[in-house]
Length: 308
Image 1 (cartoon, rainbow, N blue to C red):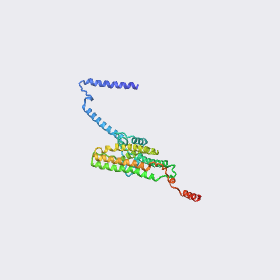
Image 2: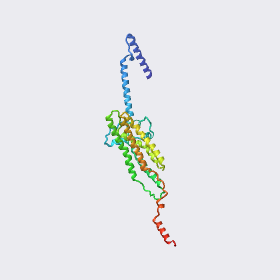
Image 3: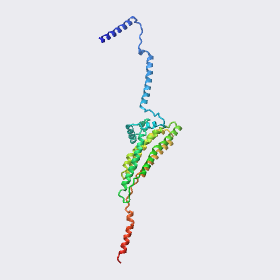
Image 4: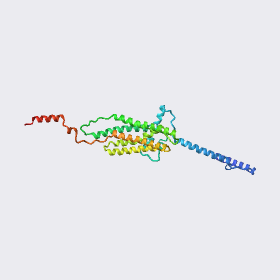
């Protein structure tokens, strides 16, 4: 019954509209599509909505910037707010650097973290000292004059060297880029935490290479360390070359050369200090070449008792 009454009301309204049109047949009717103003307004609103949509999409895709002060605990707490998938993606990118993909733009995305760099440096300190100590034990085990003693002082040396490299070198590089940006507007720069993040993740390639250095083969050690050094340095070049390529060529090349020189010194220093060259066994040992006191006494006794 309700459906029927609704249909009757619709037909009644239609009949009333038809009667009104019949009474005034000369009345002009206007279509909405014939009025240019609504179309103009619609196009203008559409353009605004597209621009707002792109802006909103950009804001949604880009992470929110940290608004906390540098001197507050919340600022550093935000730098450790990162999930496992992001850390693994950044480690994977540092192992397999791709030409044309900037590590900062494609993987950090204005959201640097200190969780990955801190634990990468800590893991590298442990591996380089433990594996270096183990390789020394394997090389000298079996020598009669070798007494094993754990070299705990190397942990301190490794910690100072690695963490200083991961913090002081990015600080100097960040300050240099800030200075060059003031001189030339074509120079780009990253934030200090982004620079530290790049250097921290670039060291991840050294962890498996130092573990493999336990094998007492000198050529093999040099090869795997050179491979790790090349991968790590390639990450740094891909990240910082776009920032200075429009600067003075001498300045840009000099900056990259200084970065790579420090990188090479780190790798060679770790190799020579923690993974020393295996010593060849000396066939003429001191005990065989020089007679001991007991041997001298025996010789004297035998000489004294020898019959004439």
